[in-house]
Amino acid sequence: MQAGIAAGISTMLCAVAAPATAQSISSLAQQAAAGREEVEPPRAAPVRPPAEAVPMARIPVAAVTLYPGDVISAGMLAQREVSDAVLDRGGIALQSSAVVGKSARRVIAAGQPVPLNALVDVTLVTKGVATRIQLKDGGLAISGYGMPLDSGAAGAIIRLKNMDSGQIIVGEVAGDGTVWVKTR
Image 1 (tube, rainbow, N blue to C red):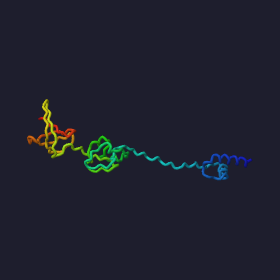
Image 2: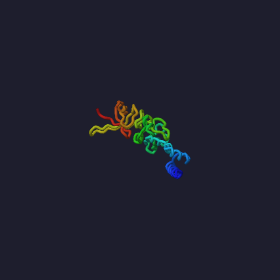
Image 3: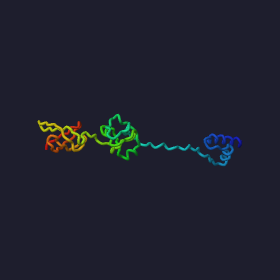
Image 4: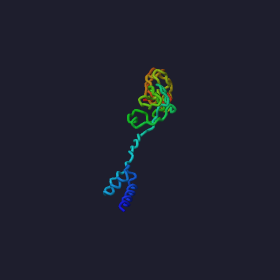
């Protein structure tokens, strides 16, 4: 009868100890008979921590190589995902609207983020090149040509020499390259 009990215990231990490390049935029976049960729990496979997600952002990059003087259009840009570490360095355009309509000051390689210090406003009036000047004051409208003494982009205040009178005048560059003179 004792042999039958030992066989029953060893059968139960085998069922319980199946996931444990390999042990012989006789050693399990001896441990049960001794009153101690030292069955090791199954070891879990090492769990690899999930790769940390790196925050990404989409920024405009040059789709083609941009050369000095190129006026940048939307077709010359593409979007690329970059890590926040690139954004933290600063100094790059985050939106296409900050780049389109500007002129490249130096070479910007294709696929590279667009540095803000590589952009300038498009020069509409060039020093030494005759340009149209206009004056409007109430019902009075006068137009003529002047010789710019400064170069300027839209919105810039520049000095010009009136070609008719030789006087130095000051005006604001309009988006079409005309310089609007204001009365004092």
